[in-house]
Image 1: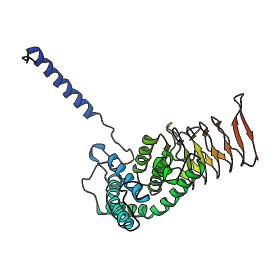
Image 2: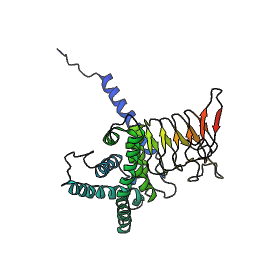
Image 3: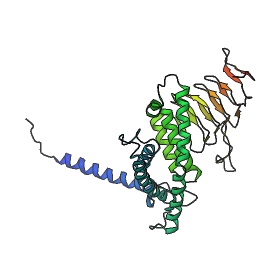
Length: 320
């Protein structure tokens, strides 16, 4: 049996002190803001309804059901109802995406109303993205085929769609890349980070990746913003396509947007743990061995391996 206890003066004093401490903490947290949030526009973060992470996640999952109806979302999709299903889902995505693009594009912290011109711009961008969905699906089908054909453990293409983290990450990348090409702020990175959190695969939406791209296993893969990857490239877990250095401006700040990541030509294989840095070129048909540290270009059809003496060996023109 529990016995009730009367409050004492000490209890009341402690509660009052706690409330006072909380008030001062809340005041301190509210005063120190990152102002301006965007130094190029002077936006005040307290006045802008930024894109919602939850809404972006829902949009990506809805797009997955549109790109692969029957695999995600409602499973009872047939040849007779697929067009109705895709059409209805696409209409919902269009509305949700328009709202999120408007949030990221149009609010400036000065106005509480969105101008008709700004909504019109958002609508144009949404329509341009929707028009690219058939091409996104075509590219993803080549990626799925590459996963099935490149992995002896894959028993079907269905398995690759349902189970492979590489396919999930590449799907997010292909969606984010098209939004990035349209110069839509923030949302492409949010989509890429959703995949990064779920799969451990970090692909910047600014990277350019060709057809039939396969990431096997995938955990720890990093592909930087200005990377260029050709067709039929395969990479394994732990691979980094990164920057060797960051040129600085007169104020000592990194210069944005300059090419600083590798170019990987067609039919290259990069094995697990390889680190490839800088604006170098991995020639067509080359194979980069596991745990190699590479900061110089290699000729087409080269083999680069980590030898027992810890030095990297190059064998060019091997015809692999």
